[in-house]
Length: 122
Image 1 (cartoon, helix red, strand yellow):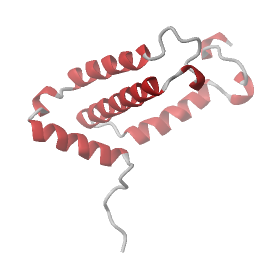
Image 2 (cartoon, rainbow, N blue to C red; image 1 turned 90 degrees about the horizontal axis):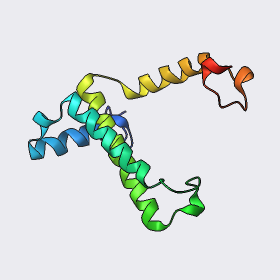
Image 3 (cartoon, rainbow, N blue to C red; image 1 turned 90 degrees about the vertical axis):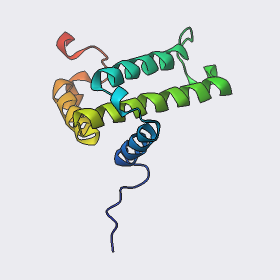
């Protein structure tokens, strides 16, 4: 018999965890799409702070404290994105698959291979 429960590492499982976390704290009223989008932007900026002033941000430039901070900020970005998707009815997996297909049309591999320019520059 197959379970209808999502795998623990799915976006649906994360959505359910964030719903529970917010409900336990009665924070649902604060989790409007606008507030979540703003919080997502703040967390993305906090992620960028860890790379500011590094030459490339490659592994050899990061100590354990930086790697931990990066991991935590990436988690914050993901969690706010999952909550924003939940509030706006966006299926993140489907949206990502759709966007990869659209990017494939904008950036045909045979045409842009090894070229980092934006699609309107080649």
